Length: 206
Image: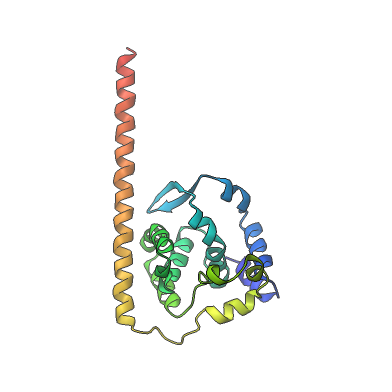
């Protein structure tokens, strides 16, 4: 992704950086917030999921993580940023960690080394979700994006308790794969049910 690197070369506020990010990626935030459902990759399926208030509340910080880390918004990029967030302890916000698991498996299947690297990079970083508890929207919008990056991205020289964090990551991958397989089975079941329904309708009309 190009835009985060461009943004981080310029002196910008968080708000200006986000505007540039949305414009570059042709994302319509108004439509996103007004929609009752959003489509996300769960495994290899682009599935509709409820656009819950928790997602809306934390979306800004998720997108800032994209900008800070340079990870894209394609399937691998979303898995990378999800792994990064899990590594940086998104588990402190349980609903966020669940959403991270939804996006983790696809990118891991496509590029396990990139997603694994993103997790360990997250282990040496600090995510921004804590800002939602003690800062106003205006305070966050006026932060300097470069200072935010310097004070949060790769601030630790090494991964503490790497053996334990590795076990943790394996657990995340396991549960993410369970979600992936479950969605595949559910998707297949829906296709079979639809085929049976169409056959019955065809028989009844003969």
